[in-house]
Length: 491
Image 1 (cartoon, rainbow, N blue to C red):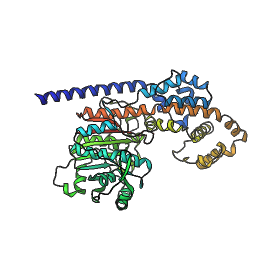
Image 2: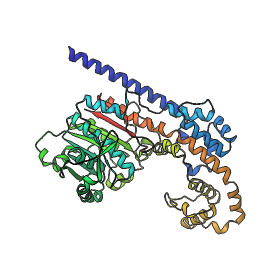
Image 3: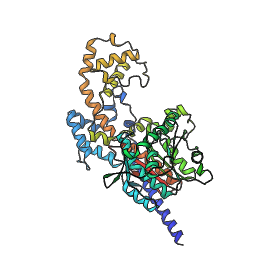
Image 4: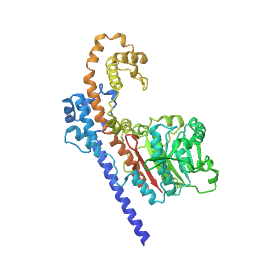
């Protein structure tokens, strides 16, 4: 009777969490409904489609029109840095958007410390962090230092014999799991060249491990004296979909597990596009997956019903066209669409922009001006995507930018336009720059709202498939690592 009572209590708790997530999703979709045109617009078309007048709410637009650029930007930084709104129209816009974003609530969204406590309750042992500054960027070093002890502890708590790193490239996370925490780890990646080069790089790091790695206790770095097992990290080439038999790769690369019913933990540090959703589907459908610890990334590379034919680079190069769409995953959101530009916006970081007080590049204005001129002068001309990347730093003025773009695109417009034309364009640039900067910042407020909907959809998908130990975790500092949330689930 006691077991039955516990089961009923767990089921009740699960139903409560599901209802809360659905309520949050409903709030998000209702809020986004009139604003998706802003999220889905393209900054290239800022002038040609008149985004300023056509997309911004009138009250917000009127407020910004009455401010100088520096004044408006300063008000934006102040409001975005504050925890509470001051009742101004600009502050209310920022804080209303923020109020819809997912936040730590000790229910379905945990802090990293709360996750540690959950893992301990599941029987996992949390060991000190290991800091490796060499062979990684400072951002990657921070992410690996933060994530690896939690993954290693979850492996023990979930009863998994091996960690499998999905889309790990050269295996920075797997490296720490093996050398710092003595975990068997298999890194899978679809890039055969990266996989082929990784073992040599790992050997170099192994030789220098005691010189470059430090154990961190209470913020103090300590030297690591223990010997390391140099044969725990393996690599294999695979384009991962929900149908990939992960256990067969584990048994192939670790023959000692070949005769066992091997259980593995599936992890991934910034899994691009559909690799995140497919990792969750593997957890749901393959019983050998004891747990999943996934940090998603690159939402613009997700497939969605509205752009199902726009396959990302991995799908084009490695043949994954048959995989299911990446958004939405849950039955509850079936039929709902975000749009590619909205998903691309979700990958931007308002936390970092506000922290660094970072305005957009003038390349956005130059590109929008170019688009406006081409539409008026050559209305049937189409510009191939990517042809004008990285030319702005070579130009001191818009006129220089236009001349270079004219040559690259073979427009034959530059010599046909009088000098007065460019004088008039450059005269209008200050006004257009103000509008573009402010529109960019206003639009950026929606980034985490869209990301929150994507994350909650994945969380709800796992609940819909009967799993209870499922959490969204705010794992990283969003300024240091903007894709800061992970999805953790235990079978």
